Image (cartoon, rainbow, N blue to C red):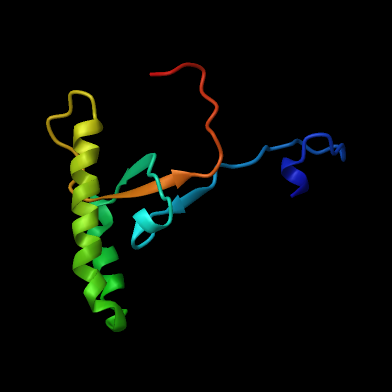
Length: 105
């Protein structure tokens, strides 16, 4: 905590607070989740699916999360400027803190 504490002078460099992201929950509409970041997970989709299938008690969610990943992939492709192709599978995240940017773009 001290490493990100501006005003705490102990002689070390302050690294600042890192961004924190929330992962998209099941039934996101009930939680007020609003995605603002999409990450391409196409390269690791098979590994993620295999991991999900280890949770046999959650079999009904396997196809749900695959459909969500496909939908997020479609949104990602549309959001890429001029991209003819793009992610097949993507995950959505929500930033907890605002981002500081030099300009909008």
